[in-house]
Length: 257
Image (cartoon, rainbow, N blue to C red):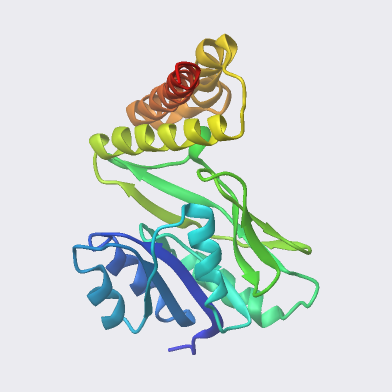
């Protein structure tokens, strides 16, 4: 079996016992160090992580952006692989990472890769969800999470390579989880807009959801994913509307104080 690479795999987790074993199994042969930062877990997340050889750290929740920056700050390896507890490095992606290290090209500060998500009965290969390319691998000290408290963004200083193979995303075991998570993110996004003093508008409330559905289902070919493709486009449109609705509520409540 090949030796682990000089990578710190960094992830945050809370009550992730159902998905964490799959994630850690894909990381153990690949990364020399695994760091799991957890907060308030009431299941076996910590025990599962420690059994897989991960270093576990309890940290009070600071929001997605700051929690991920803290996790990266704990890394000791020259490279960091950032991953979520419900994700899994596919064999093709793992081999692509190894090939990237074999090339040892000093030009690159990091690398991007596509992510594919499972919903109901299939991997989603079209619409707003794929290829969902993002930066996951970067040199320690050359990357930082920025942006709002939701839809945080990893920014890396320097050129990026592109890796082949998908990061597998097992986010939604059922439709109820999909709906509840969207509502959760809509609330966080609305709070972020309110705190940044962004004005509420009719356009964002009524036209943006329509555009979001058309973009995902028609223009990005979400209809090729069958019924799940329709559900994704519909739910994404609803999330945009909910974000505007929560933003309106926060704005109006502030006027009554």
